[in-house]
Image 1 (spheres, helix red, strand yellow):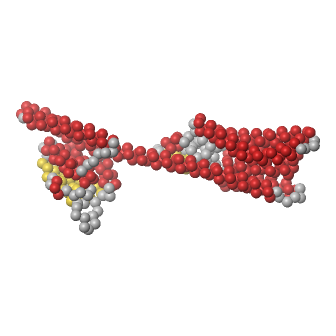
Image 2: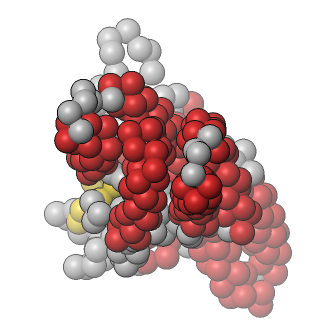
Image 3: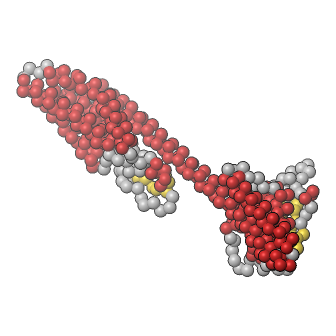
Length: 408
């Protein structure tokens, strides 16, 4: 394989040794399946297994070589057969010890593969000098090596050429019919090794897919936790700041009221801490009724007149999302708007929070409203944030009408 393309974000395009794109995987997933000394060792063992499986086909040529009458021919043939076997095993060893560049399949450069194949074919031709047609049986080794290393289209073409060169052309030159038994054995060997290779590659791709899904889940959870922590702390710290400023002003003129405000600050700080802890644990719950109580406290501390709905008439459906909308909207009113009056309207399918402050003022959404928009959209609704004609800002979260017969 060639090196992966530069990581431009979260993905890496992996190409095989012939330049074809094989898989787009994240950089983390790619690194997770890159080579380690342990994985290279395991692949070396796999190479010895592959070589050992086909070594049985060396028995017949070795026996034939041993039975040659001429001692020089016998020694020559035995030596070349052993050299052929070592070249075959060495090719697998080299191939499987090569580090994987990307997660798909370990492989040296293409020219190295053909060099290995050429060496094996040269030994096969050398064996044919004394064993003649019987040397064609060693073509099974070439077939298995081709199926293990080359891409399918190129592998089929190369295998066809090798089969012609070993079992058809020499026999036709000698006036004999092709060696159909060896042809069948070579085809079966290539099919078996190619199938094993495809199985290994599919397993690697499944591993990468699982890693990618895990990354996506982790990223989504990080976004959720970040959004929730922002909503909790943004609201609570704003109220704490306002109440602390109010308590400082009241220390001289109304100490009892100042003590009450400081007690509220302590309570809010403890609630914020508990909220962050439960958010990290995924256990926190938000409700519209609870957020109305918090909104009433926050707006009163900021000396903003509030027109809030009765908690007895609140809808049950969408209560959690409505609670988040109210929390973020009130936080923005207290922190940014400069408003003197705020209104909250709730229906079974919508919540609207308005104020008479400065509005957006040409500024876009902050991170809080952006996260809120994502939360509402994920729940099936839409969030609209716009300046009101009479001045101020309106935050509206609306959902499709519920089916007839739903009392809330």
